[in-house]
Length: 393
Image 1 (cartoon, rainbow, N blue to C red):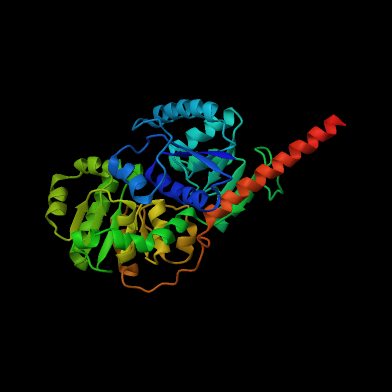
Image 2: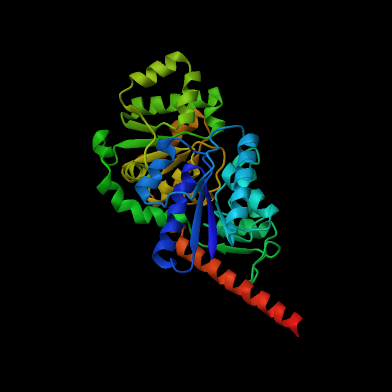
């Protein structure tokens, strides 16, 4: 069986590592993987370092699309992916998450009738102003096999009309599965390696549970000067009042948009030694920071989950989240970009003890997915054979 994996953004590269590792370890004789990098994230610190560090196979193709408007970027990806699909003729195209690379792969494959596998299906923020929400919904509804990491995601699919079908599965009769989270697979696999192979804690002079980790990258935060200002004012006041370090690996978009902040605020941020603004970090470095932080503040969906994996309370810089289980467990608080709410949430979460129920699977989601692909291929082959036998008679 041949699968064609589409990656483009940093989180997709990381997620793909779990599937590639499962294929290499358990399915090397039965699954051939072709990897296509769209080039959506093209910076070395945002892309190549993950291939090097995590042992991901180098992409067979790189479209080198780079940064552009949503429409132009997606159009260039569709064209490039379609051409590769015509060459490779895979049994399945594998799509992750909710980026423009995901949407482009879904459109290209659906138009030429190649079966789509969507990993992280069923997630919903119920806010269609988010480009990611539109991408994930459109991808789900042209997919043949949908793998959701949570029970909530599974129920969302049922609510939208998907059925609990028996195979063989097709685009008109899709299969939905609650499989756990491939990112949890990765976090378990790389957790010990992270502290053995990185020195970021000593380099930044950080000690366990004596700092807050923050990440900001969503365009609705970075591209709105007032929201970005509120977030940075909150981080500054937290660092001052709590006398705790705030470590901020700076996304390229955020670095660029910081220039819109009032000069007085930038000066105060730069002058405060408890705010450590650093370059984007590698996956293993990020795990080391997450494992050792006291608290995590983020607008990233992936970082929300990783906070939960490592039993860290999380403040979410968004008005809603697709990872509702984190909120329901009481380990995360939605604060949007309001300074007052951010500071109140820090007061509530910083030194509390929490329970973290198991909600993201058993660490074997990638193996489950590979086996379901093979099972469906066999069922489809049997179905085709039965039909041909009938016609022969």
